[in-house]
Image (cartoon, rainbow, N blue to C red):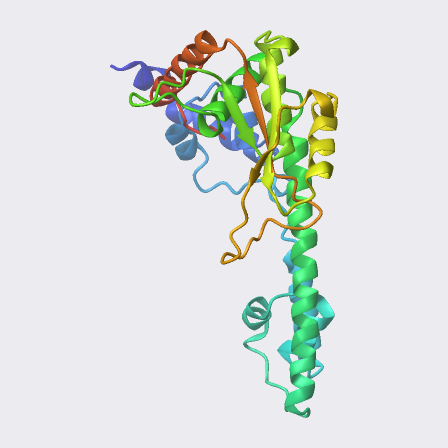
Length: 290
């Protein structure tokens, strides 16, 4: 008899306990932890036919919108007007009210186009609010970061964005180039964790010659807390008039290059760490337990 079979031999007795807990309002996780059931298939069988308690169900934010859309449709409003009123997409409105009678068309094509434009603007505004809210919530989910977490993130960050050694071009040195200030800050925090001294760091800016070079140099110097005079010579990219650049405007600041002096040994360790992560990922247990 296997360990799993022996552990759950009294299945019916275990199911009675699981069902009783479920009906008292316990979640799957609470039941699992209380009954020491670490096998999802067994847990599913124990709770088969028992609905989840209401408190564990996520509320459907669109239920209220659906009822309002139906009420407006019954008042004779078209999809365009409902979209303006509620900021919903037409596809959602169509699903919600398709069983209701269609209103009579009483407006010109120009009026309908104007309403459609306003509806689309309302939809874009709603989507932007949702987009920001998702990002804000996700940001809060990170919380504090341990030294090991920063270490692993830094290794992955460098291996995706940093310079690499090639058999045909030996470059065993740590050099990191990026236009994202957040990436630069995380990279510098990682170097600090590895006890790389500030004296080992060198910075210089890479930017298109048509940009505001002086402003970019000030920005990057402030970001890494150094004087502009401490930056290396800025590398200017020649602008090709035949191409249309999209990285323009006041927010374009080029890239910052971060070099670590005498970093051959550090580079070799980074490469080793990265392949260690690859091997560990292959062996990791990625099962999500709910």
